[in-house]
Image 1 (spheres, rainbow, N blue to C red):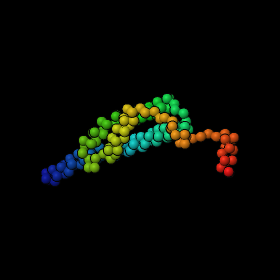
Image 2 (cartoon, helix red, strand yellow):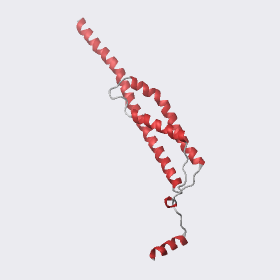
Image 3 (cartoon, rainbow, N blue to C red):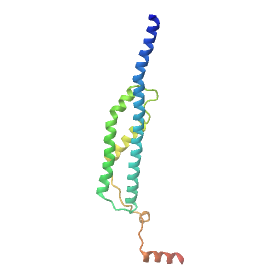
Image 4 (cartoon, rainbow, N blue to C red):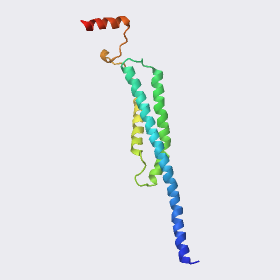
Length: 152
C-alpha cells in the first residue's frame, strides 16, 4: 500500500468524520427552527384569542370575568415559560455560527418580549363608555318599535 494514498484517504475520512458532526447539528437545527415557528404560531393564536375576548368585553357581548382574565394570563405565562427554556438551546445553535443564523430568532425574541410586557401590564378589558359601540340585545317589542320608526 502506498503511504501517500493512504494518508490522503485518511485525511479525507477525517474531514468527513468532522463534517458528519456538523451535519447532525444542522439537522437538529432545522428541527429546532420548525419548533420555533410552531411556538410563534401558538403565540399568535393566544394573542388573537385574547384580542377577541377583550373586544367582546369592550362591546358588551360578554361580561368581564376575572376567571377568564386569569385563564388568558395563564396561557401567556405558560408560553413564556416554554420560551425561557428554549433560550439555552437557541444560544447553542447561535454559537455554532451557521451561515444565516437560526431562522425565526428575531421574531421569537420580539414575541417573547411582547408577551412579557403583556403579563407585566396586567390590563383588564373594560366595557366601552360609548353606547353605540356596544352590542344591543332587542326583544321582539323593541325590534317592532325600531322597524316602525324606520318606516316613518
